[in-house]
Length: 116
Image 1 (cartoon, rainbow, N blue to C red):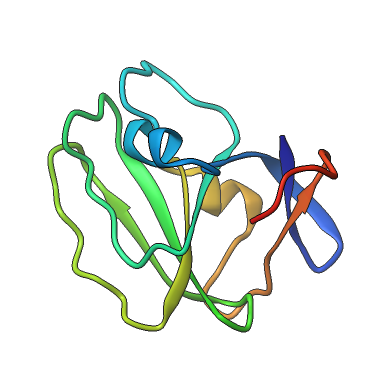
Image 2: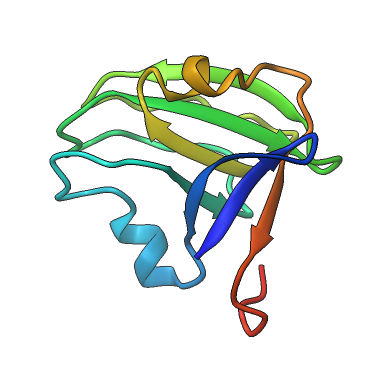
């Protein structure tokens, strides 16, 4: 488990995809989701098989949000070449958290054995 942070403020708990299996499964099969899901080394996502809409944040190498989109289920996003991490959350979450393009983000890990 980890925390999604911006400017030293905790935005949400975050599950981090640390294996090929967790990347492949993502948020599939869930009826709801609180918090965020981070996919390191990722430039695009899809919502095929999703049961709810997602907010998507693309984070660049400098750990700043470079693009935000909301995706309905059964859609494919175009790759964002400068993205290095993708953060997903239930649609409307980013607005509640105040997350915007240009904001710095950090994934603060609570497990010291977990490496991104």
